[in-house]
Image (cartoon, rainbow, N blue to C red):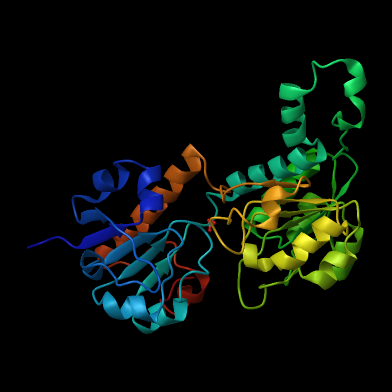
Length: 332
Ligand code: GLV
């Protein structure tokens, strides 16, 4: 009898060479594949019973064409690329990798803040090109920064990742305020964080960091009105999903000085087009969606996907179902 076929998307496979084959080959045939919206779905993909996916779009069209599918295992925590309702209707599990990646995203967030506060990109360039020149050429280009110590960090979304960012920011001596759809009283106690409404957060933060999932409610949560409420000295950090911010309004804010700068790991269109105005801006630090991209975290994410796929193929409920499916499949 042939084994069930498990499709691994190139993003997940390339990060963890040999791992999926080693861990799943006793119960499945692993193959590397992908599909693109608007293009014919490759024949081998149509036979998959499980998929470990990066950010490929999972919609009705895909599900109709992959009739034996039992599980979509998202290699990551966000699952805005997956039509969960359509999967649920067909009895297909959707899992993700929460928790294990929070510290990696939090570290990148702090890294982006430091990069902006200490002008590290500029400093690196300066050290390589201008530092050794005669002193009179130093002038205003010598990279004067600002302290994080004593500044206010506004966290939008105090979930698992937002919490880890707050823990680290506290260690830098920052004051934490946060906005969330839900008040987190326990976190307020452990972090000394203060709950505020979004307007208060925007008006009173020196740094703002976004940690919400992309949903219809959070799409363009930060638009022109919100950016105009921020201080001209404030920085915006986004390591969540690009479309949470109105990118065109952000470009105007950065160009016209409504805010001081931004640290961005996510964009409306990825990879970020080379002709995006962001590419040429000096007051932004850009990263190519690397929030979870560390050796340890990517391996932990792969192992979590493997555990979920294994469970589903063996007729069990996978341990890391997305919240929308937990009750439906009878998981607490
Ligand atoms: C990364 O973008 C993730 O969803 O984990």
